[in-house]
Image 1 (cartoon, one colour):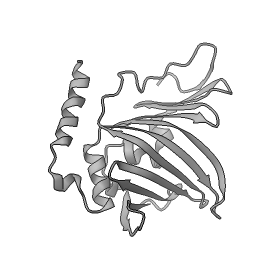
Image 2 (cartoon, helix red, strand yellow):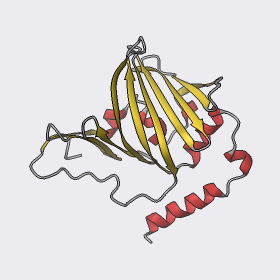
Image 3 (cartoon, one colour):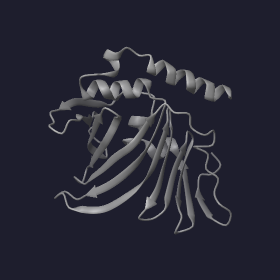
Length: 213
């Protein structure tokens, strides 16, 4: 076992040994703070729905998501079209399989003022958001996050937690369009492959952008 994997192993053990009262937090705000403070890796299947301001379904997609804090994540879309988005801590790679093209950008510039930094970043949610617990009758704990930056590109981010952890994430942008992510088969603090967040463009694929960062 490498030193990196050994470190993750001890982190996972530490989380398992947390006091029960901490794990069984009574509010979504507490759940969110515990997630940010204790979850080093996270992976799940996801379904994504994009809704217009009237609630009409515009797009649907599904795939797999993986996260390693701080700063690394990947979205592997399988339906309706294969796409891969990989953030390696310095760069973010967008690979459209059908277009046979990879676009590379500075991760810091690409993700500034986006909800992606909420789960993968190093700061606490209350540093950048106003948190409010939302009453619910669906058995999940919901918290709404409003950006403190009034010039943010989105209006709210809403998260839902159940007994398995993070279950839903809803982002409402400045045009009142909503993107809903529903997670399933969630796994927290599992050991991920060493190359999980390494992206190597396939041979013959056009690569556009800031590859020399």
